[in-house]
Image (cartoon, rainbow, N blue to C red):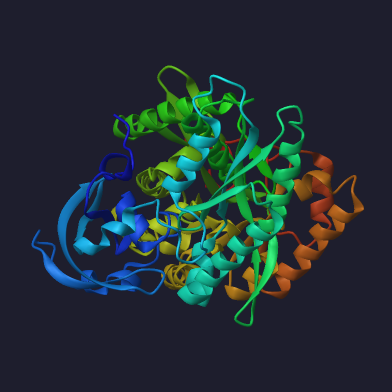
Length: 532
């Protein structure tokens, strides 16, 4: 059966419940989230809320501790830790008994302290009263759920007080730009729920309200001497055109919000019935992914990287494939995002690393193996330990392994990730920045870490023959890479004309369908450099 976060099962508990992995909270129930004042995505480090748990023995015995909320409130609690095996990882189950007086913390009808906005239950009661039972025509309106993007980064960088000021400023902006008949709530953490009414005969006003709310969240705030740029994911449902029932509308708005997060949309996303089917499909695929991991349905194909000076293979990139017993081969673009959302990317990623290195160990010693590492896996797994364990098990020399990372690795826990990358690099493993040039801060990341290689994103290679700007960018990246002593790889080379143009640059390595399509390793045995 599919695994679901424990807050789906344990929200009715009076205790705060969580699952820890490497001192990070990866799952939590609603009472704990409400007490801390955040959501799971933005949950602070354990040392910031319950430092005593870091040194406690996991013996299932209650012990006293000091618990701190994001609003600075300190509580005397009892907590216990219990060993737990989850998704092939050694985790800890954390249970926290709050003081009896804290029962109000879970009363979502209470006004929010930071913003002065109403709570979840008050919001619900107001709308249920407004719309009644739906048997007669009622005022129409748009229901929006908004989530501040990367709010946890604000909390980590500037501290709790500044983060709370940000929430206060957002709440004040909503009250300023919306009318008195709009209803605004902050149910938990950095999530906001907003209802804006309009006459039934003028549904186009829903778009106007959505635009206003988008502009409220997409802004730059000056807080305590800091300029903080905000964006938000926004999902919405239009009542009664999508549904006339409040509970259903909330569900639809939440589905739309999830879609906005998934798409990283700078705009709002309105509910579409297709989302319901997509949720079902993704749930089934998550279940099948778990089964695939247990029954060895994954396999690897390899694509060669060709040295342009010698026309020989110098490295092969391992590419994950999934042979579904019913649906056939499923594209990684379809199942990797689901694996990342569910946490299955960690055991899947470990399998890829081990299998790729095991197969590469049978290649000539001058051939390296490149393995893509998901930013989610890098954040939630102990990658340093995983690399050491893999090299030990396979006997592969460290200097034959390359880890390919995209700049999304820098979106969370930046310093910790940089430290981990440095430790891995000291082993002799090469670190490669993949898809270089398409992000907002690629140059800054090159300054932050001495990558061994940078791979120019295939979009520039595709367009460089017909677009002078793309050609200039490719040339500039070549110059920059060599100035920083970083090898430059052109990926996505598909035509002879593209290859000829690259040969007249300082590009050292190329990869693409022209040189070789992904294939089983045995198929590449005849390539120059591999057959030695």
